Image 1 (cartoon, helix red, strand yellow):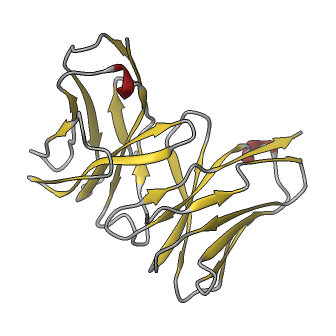
Image 2: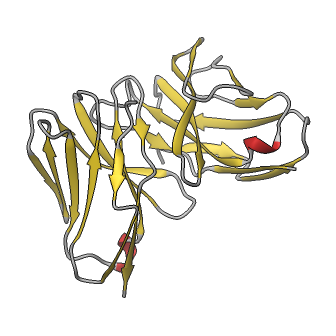
Length: 115
Length: 108
C-alpha cells in the first residue's frame, strides 16, 4: 500500500531533550516536506526536500533540523525542544513538485507535547 | 503570502444538503488543489484544478476557479455524515501553502 509513515504518532517529552520524528514513504517520491498544524494558524511548512541531499527552509524552520540521506526517509529533528513546539506535525511527499497533478500525500501525523 | 484563505471557518448542514466552501488567494497560480482532513489525521488530496480551467467535477465534488477574482469554490453535493471534516485549499507549485481550513459538520 502506498503510504507515508510517521513515527511516533504521539510523543510527550520534556524541554531540552533531543528527539527525532521519522518519516518514510514507499512511493519513490522525490519531494518530501514537514508541516506543523496549530489552532488558528493552519498548516505551516517547516522544511522541504526536493531530492536526496537537497533540503531547504520553509516558513517556520527555527528550532528544527532535517536530513535527506535516502530518498524514502526525511526525519525531523528537534535538538532542544521547547513548549512552543508543542503541535501536530505532518510529513508529506509527492512524486515531483507538490503543486503538480497528483498533489501531495500526507502521513497520519505526530502529536508532540513538550512540557 | 501565497497561502489561500478558506471561508467560512465553520459550516454545519443537514445530511443531504449541499455544502459550499470558498478559497481566496493573492498570488497568480498555475493550479489550485483541495484537500480533506478528518479530525487529527493527515490531509487527503481531493481534486486539482488548473488555472485555465473554470470548473471541474469528481463524483459529488464540483470545483470552480475564477482567476480574475483569485477565488475558488468547492461544492459537495448531497452531503453525508462521512463528509464531516476540515477542507483546505492548497496553493503553490514548488511548495504547497494552506490556510486554516473550513470545518464542515454534516448532521445525520
